[in-house]
Image 1 (tube, rainbow, N blue to C red):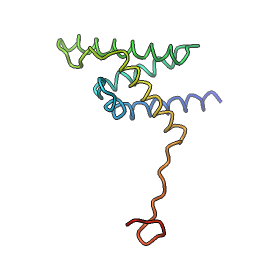
Image 2: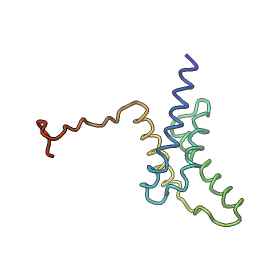
Image 3: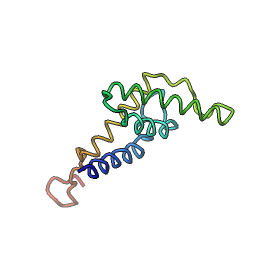
Length: 123
């Protein structure tokens, strides 16, 4: 039972890592460059015992900002703009989690497209 839950959680984190760049690229003021930090932050925030969704979101924002600051400091110059607003990060992180949840729950299904000559086809 625990192994199945851990596998499902690992699958969720794997999905987050894959969808974060595309999802974050669509959020004004965030950009795909922060995706590795967001994926790491979501993973860390999900491990906070007893935390509410809002607490995990706040933690993920703080962890993401720490990651950006650390990268910039290690590089000795600005690699990623550190002036990403908390609000933009909240929207980006929430969107990445929402998309990952939809994929994990298999709520996104491609509709069947009829082939040429099949009733309903516009080809």
